Structures are given as structure tokens and as C-alpha cells.
Image (cartoon, rainbow, N blue to C red; front, side, top):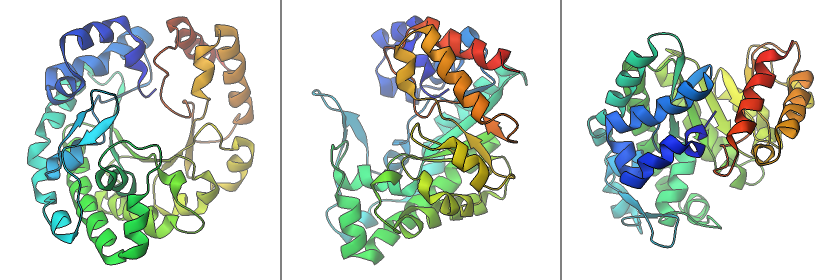
Length: 318
């Protein structure tokens, strides 16, 4: 359950002493944050504590959190020469701290719980990189792609190379599965998904050679399910608006479906959480490969008793 740790008092205690980036970059701290929700809720899998923007940073474009909130990149590419400054060959060595955190968690879990690694997709990362950070209206990646396709493809190829090595590092460090977060896929209009995002994810999946199962979460792109299946991923993650009853019939049975409880229900009551969780479980009853999960991350104001209700409902469902 992504971002489950941030509702925990033990996580907030760490945040009082360390910045978010310190938690990400310090293997012992990242491992501790990863394990905290497992100790509380005994989830079936732990997802390593990190951030998708470690890849741009590893390639030479650092980032920080602005005083007013949100993410700011340390510099923003303005031309092809700037894009050429981004070096995918740096990624694996620079991100060895993620591998160290994975190995610490793997040792602590001792085979009792699965461990998931992750990264952002080339399209989603390109948006943050070209926009210069967070934005209410990402425009620059789309602008580059339609006005200078070779430049966009060059950036996407550099990101793809870096991500392949990064995910190989995570496999080598003990990840049992990998998730690619294509969080901004919903920004793509019409039939743009295959060229802007899908082809690069497919290249990553192919390069990894099915060493471990790969989950692709392309938020807002469930209508492109054929393109998502074509990436070669073993599992498709679904946002809260994805029509489960329809997708369970359309998506081939060999491809798993993960999701998709609306995270906002976790801010309601335990009764609401249990009811809405059971609705999803009933819809997906008997569908091979369904992995119950949220359609997005855990809200920071979700009461702990609601997470407990969710876990108990899923585990008692028969």
C-alpha cells in the first residue's frame, strides 16, 4: 500500500529529525521507513521508501522542496545542449544507496514478506524535468514532443537507459517485483500514449527480461488498456476511476490487475472503508491475478483505524 508509512506516528517522529531527502538518501533511514507499515499492518508486500526523482538527480538534474511547498528542480533544460548534459551512465553508481536500503529491508523481512522496488516512467519524469518541478498544468514535455520529436525521443531514451540500470540494481539488491509509476499518463491526449510513454515502458520491461514481475501504473490511462498490455508488464495498476467490472472482462487473464480502492475513502470511517473494499472484492471475485490495493497513495490524514479496517476486510474476505 503506497505511502502507508506517512500516516504513522513513528514516521512523523523521524520527519521531525530528518528531511525527506535525508530519509531517501540514507539507507538505514529508508529501510526503517519501509518497514514501519509492515510492522504495524503485516501487509503482503513492502515497497521501498524512495522517490521517482532520484533518477533525474542521478543524471545531473538535482531537486529540492520549495519553501512554499512542491518540488523544484535545481535547473531546467532549455535546449538540446541542456538535455545532452543529462548522463544516464551515472545512474547506477549514484543510486547505490537505494540498493543498500533494499538489502537492509530484504535481510529484515527474511523471506516472510515480498519486497517491491519502483521507478517513475520516462514520460512522467520528463514532465517534471522539463517543467522545472511540480506544476498544476504540465505543458513542456508535450510541447517538446510535438515541436521537436527527436529532442523528446533523445530525452526519453536517456531516461530509459538510466531506468533499466536502476531497476537492474533493484533486482540485484533483492526486489521481488518492480512497479513503474506513469503517474502523468492521463495528460496524454488521444492516441499519443504509445509514442510518448508506452514504447519506452515496453523497452524497459523487455530489457529486464522478466527477472521479476513488473507492475505498470499509468494513472488516468485505463482506457488505453491494450497499450498497457502491450508494454509486456505482468500486472496493470488501476486508478480509482478505472471500471473494474469492464476491465476484468477485457484484459487478458494472464495479466494481473492491481487496485483500485479510492484513497479518499480512507479519510471516512472504518465502516465505509470495509463496505467499499468489499464492493471491489466482489467485483473481482474469481478473477485470476487480482491484487487488492488502493487506486493511489494513502492520504496523510487517514486514521489508523481505517487502514486496520481495510486490512481486516481483505484478509477475511471469502
